[in-house]
Image (cartoon, rainbow, N blue to C red; front, top):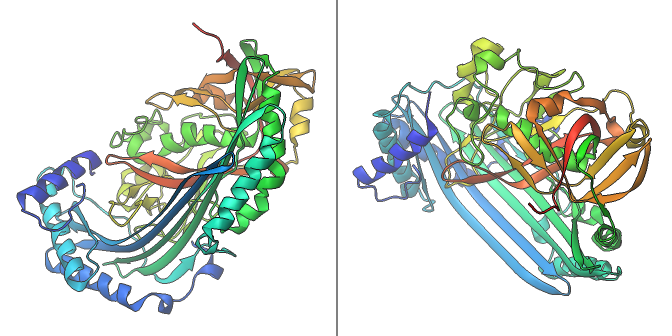
Amino acid sequence: MTDRRDFLKTVGAAALAAGATGRVLHAAPPARLVSPAHGIDAYAAELTQEALQAATENGASYADVRIGRYRRQSINTRERQVTGVSDSESYGVGVRALVNGAWGFAGTQDVSRDGVRKAALEATKAARAARRAQRRPVELAPVSAVKGTWKTPVKTDPFDVPIEDKVALLLAANEAALKVKGVRFANSGVAALREEKTLATTDGTLVTQTFYRIAPSFTATALGNGDFQAYTEELAPRGSGWEYMQQLDLPTNAEKWAALAAEKLTARSVEVGRYDLVLDPRNLWLTIHESVGHPTELDRAMGYEANYAGTSFVAPPEKVIGKLKFGSELMNIRADRTAPDSLARVAWDDEGVPADEWTIIDRGIFKDYQTTREQAAWIAPLTGVKRSHGCSFAQSWSDVPFQRMPNVSLLPNDRDVTLDDIISATDRGIMVTNRGSYSIDHQRYNFQFGGQAYWEIRKGKVVGMVKDVAYQATTTSFWNALDMLGGKSTYFLGGTFNDGKGEPGQSNQVSHGCPAARFRNISIINTGRAG
């Protein structure tokens, strides 16, 4: 097995020892969207083959090459002014080589035949150096070679929309929010990413993919009664084009969202205690991300990854696969890299593995982890799954690919249970909407989550807004307390645009779908009390 931390350390040392002159860095898709390989840029294909040949000539038993172009843009506004605009593009090549069972990686912005050959040479040098510290040779799960292209289906490329039009939309939303009595501040923004990537491997894979991702934001702040309260609407980032922004209709909805900030000024501070907790899916998705998504990453469970909130209590694999009662029988968690509009949707991952969909938790019992080609063999005797689940990803051409989270979602109830059904069945409860502050320990076991708006439920009815709310639990006690689950009509696809992992850190984008849900007898604390 590869210790990723040791790998990065030894790769960096190897580069120095070798006197490297190049830039050595730290150290089943939807068929209707897949096009034939002739759509691949001929020059990119030529360069990747040049790099692969150079890697194999220098001893690599396996190598992969990614040529990537990344365009990132963000626009932020406050009240009636633009507070920031950024627009950048990065283009380069990353080469990963496996020599004597150890990884090496190098990247370069010199996208020429000589440039990619030099990068391939540096990657093989780094791999040889890393082998000295390698405890066990890397073994890759098999994958069939594939050639083709894939693109996120969009109607309008966000980068084709003039910045002036984007600014006008955001300022119109702010203006609408400022009409609400008591609202003094309004912030809105939008970020967009276009990722074009050609991947080639010595297994014979050659694919080009283009991903679009977009992330809007809106917050209003109200002042009054010697207090101030903010409300952030849950505008989920999506794998979509500009048409998603148009669907949200920010100028029309901003006044409604801002009114919730003003309403919080008069809300009663919550009484601490145990309540039945009703979670709107706009809040629940983040709890899934932190308490289910991260702890079921296999590198965390094996202790090879501890950055950004530690390892995992879902370990060791031989003691938890098929044995750990993670939650109630209503809890069914699926990983899915094919979900429409989701952020982690791909046709192939960064190792050329086709997009996968699999069960992580079945009727409350933990079944499987997230894996790459290297990781699949670690647990194959326990799961019977010998192939990778396709979770390899790098945030750019200049970063080494490693295991990242796919879309991880809670399946809805087969019955059409509505949010009103859940509320009417609740005698004493608190309902939480939208994501707020959160904290979780380094084993992903003890946690606390807040939200943006909270309502008290008495005898089956919502009786008013409260504030200063957060819920606390341990992961398994929380999920085993799940006793009501909404149907498809309550389903919402949330997500994050900047999920961090690794050292050096990388971010990725990932979605989580879920319905409304109720959890019995959960501890509610008051975050507004001092001392």
